Image (cartoon, rainbow, N blue to C red; front, side, top):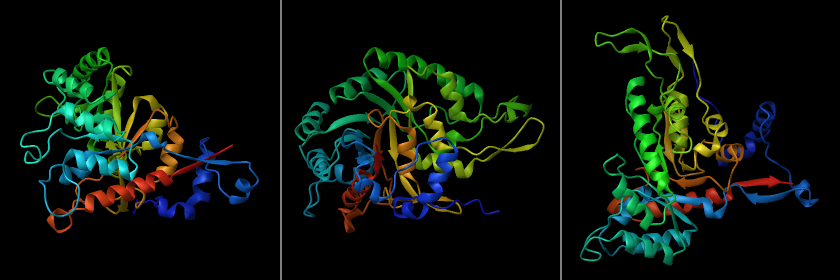
Length: 357
């Protein structure tokens, strides 16, 4: 059976607006306003769906230019030039993915204090980071985060790569303790998901030769982690593309009786039912294929960011960080590619509009 679903990207939004509105109405969720006649009569007003001060980018997506040595390409390189360029594109927030650049730029490595000055000079705010989070490294990482002015500190890896409940119990205990330390310093600790974090726990019998469960009660790994951690101490950053890939990949589990059960993951409802657990997002887009998604610039794919961000609400709380992994890195043959993709993605993010009365 073909389980592919129709695309809902920005470029396809008008063609699917009627069906989307009907689905939202049936679920009791907000419906997009449409029609220029109503706007002309003054009954509606258009507002950006993602406020300008919540439009960000994780610097992993332009790491090729941050790490580049000075060259003759005319393309910005290093923190000072790349961050200034991103600010000119319109971005007001950045999420870090490392704090180093090519040492030939300064003759040494740049310092967090020097990066902070670059941020301030360009009107940029650091909204988070992907860094090494462990009980032993946390204090040093929080020192850097506070130098850079962050309100959130996080990691790009899952809390536990395990399929077993006992390992997620240990991870939850560690993260509750680290989250308390972060809160004491005015920071929110967060973890970032990949698709496998939404796979089902193996938490039911029969047991294997090592005494580990081989079947599932239908609880997803990250859902279990959310339930076991304190909502005032531990937060999540949803990578939207990875979440939709999980929807595609992890649809069934085998229960203790050996019966296959279907349970389709819904990224929107996962956030909408507890929106304050998700202060940050990776706004990553993709074209839907038979095997999942092929990553594309934000707004050029099949993910309905309009529906996603309007339904979850709290636009002044959520931070949307554009990300694209490797597909946009142009290398020596096209050194400006990642920055052009960042501009296209910013333009598409800023074009998302909500109509309100």
